[in-house]
Image 1 (cartoon, rainbow, N blue to C red):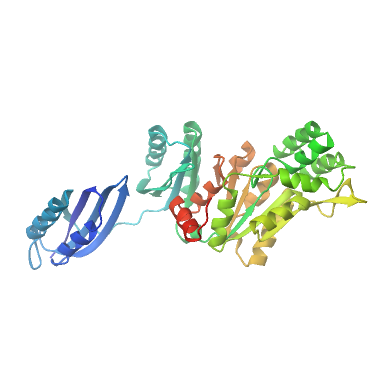
Image 2: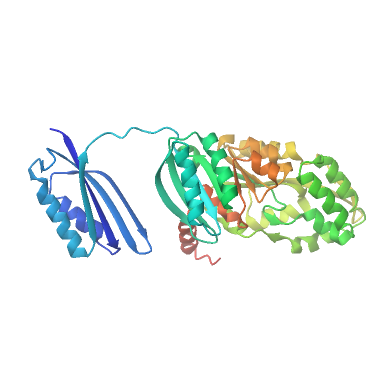
Length: 404
């Protein structure tokens, strides 16, 4: 006898007991559960159940499937819900190639943005298998499970659509490789914190405009970082070391930074910062946030004053990548399970080295090179790229009695 199926779809107001009522009725018939999915949007439930049975289109083992049909309709009527029933054949679904996760983020997602992204996916010959909302605030994020697409080609297509629609889109392979990310390595200036520490120091030295100009050239990749650092640090010569305490008080974390670190630490991630800035400032961030590893430059101080020189090897573009590799070795984590986050040309090597490279409010050269770009002002948006939802973040905070 052929294996047949009956697809049962309930829609209506959500309430306790809908699923149990349906399955209590199904339990009295000789059917097996082949698939089930349920979603609630704004208090409205959609429940789909696919059951399999042996027999023809209208009769099954142990009696007529019509009796089951009638019983299900009666349950829906009792619950004040609508029901749709459709019979079919039990066929094994052919697994489509290229299982991907596509995350779409924006302060407000318009129908045009979703339609544009969906259209590009369809044009690539791929299929959207599932859509979930990951977050509603401070940005909206939806996640599309996509099959049948080449990730590199789809990433290019969706990047163009994202730019046109002014949203962020990330394309990642699904499965264990995505869930296995265990080490986050983050740039500091203009990423973990707002602004550049050297510019805060320069403001006290009266040379802010000159330093800011050199910083911008370096971040765009127009100037060697090590040389630019020496030029900027030279301008700080003579500042008293007490200036570090003042600058530490002036440092402002990027919105969402504490949530990002706190959430990942709860999940046993290792967290590292690597900076072209200075240990006199980053050490305080390490202690404040509970960061596991750090690497930064150190300003030389003699007789209580800055000499205008850096002590030891400069943490530059290749130095950041070496730091990522060193942190991974110390943590016993493969490079494939690392995430690098940065904004400037100085971060390009570590972004290329990591298993996932994220450009955060980055310069164009970095956005083009990274696996994905996030242009929202909230650092905790990166959690959504790792498959962590806003509801899960808030539930964890509630369990710890944490008030944001």
